Length: 452
Ligand SMILES: *Cc1c(COP(=O)(O)O)cnc(C)c1O
Image 1 (spheres, helix red, strand yellow):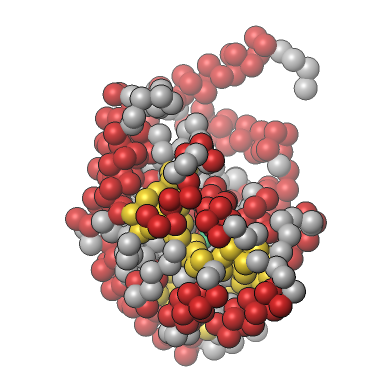
Image 2 (cartoon, helix red, strand yellow; image 1 turned 90 degrees about the vertical axis):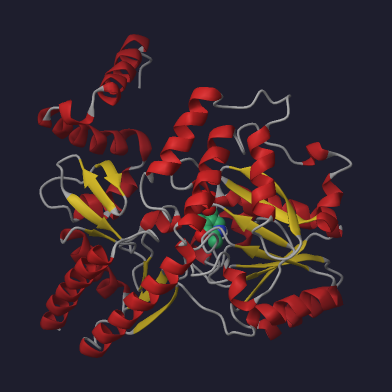
């Protein structure tokens, strides 16, 4: 592109004008123009590849689906087409889209102070730390706030290294802990990891759900002189398709880590804060990890907010030089206001209970569909509203995902990764929308089964 300052400014102004126009006054023609321009802008300035893989391009009919607004579990595109959202931003929207109390808290803080001075003590961050300390498992009491899940895991890795003085990690196959270079080392899929090797050294991957394999990996590391700082896992693997470990897995991990002086990190970026039917995923097994990572839902689906947390004993290694880890925008006042509001909504509306009850309801209905369409739906599993469906092939999973999209239900599942599709709606989703989603899902299954 040629530098064109005047054009850049007028283009910025044009979008700002639209932003400041009341919703109902935006003319239809203007919305259609946005649609076209968004596709062009993606192709020219973001990444053409996405246009090939996104259902919103390939399955929307004559026009691309461009996100415009949403409320609760309904997303509306620029054409006013409404989609039932059962993707929930992969766990971001635990309280639904634009929960009024969370939006109000963020707006109020925006009017008071949007960011920190970086020098004076900031009250909201400290208060959020205290509130979370009263919810987190066991003696976990201190926290560091940042903006994304991958930053939370990265910080947890640094903390584990500082505390133990060791460098190695044990992770699991098919794990997902974020995509910046530190957490990418822990990634359990070759596709994302291999092109970037070498990453951090001394990371061993073991099959998920197999505690004995963790003990063996630690023993073997020690045998050859590699120190292990921590074992990290998701309480339930999210990205891998809602994989639930055996009931004795987490209690055994706790025992093994204690035995060998290795820290246990629970990556609860997706499972935390109500998603699986309990406050935290590890609560299913009453295990207290040494370090816990939160993200996604923490900011209430309104402002990015994440964090990593540990006990006083572990945290002390960061006290002599508190600048060992720092951030300029992490834990900013708007994010903390949104997080406090999310926590309040979660407790007030008992979102963990809602997740549990709605999850059981959906899984039971899906079991019925599995019995009816055994050649399409192979397996169903879930805890709370983290539910996985398995299909025989990626192709068939993709048929399901695209069939749902054309029936205006937003699910996960991409062209290259659809063998397992997650159902992960807002914990606040109404039973009317759940039932409607199930009707459309059965319609998709019926049409696929008819073609077999
Ligand atoms: C989504 C996710 C992450 C990464 O979070 P980002 O905000 O996308 O960086 C890390 N760990 C788990 C378990 C996740 O589900």
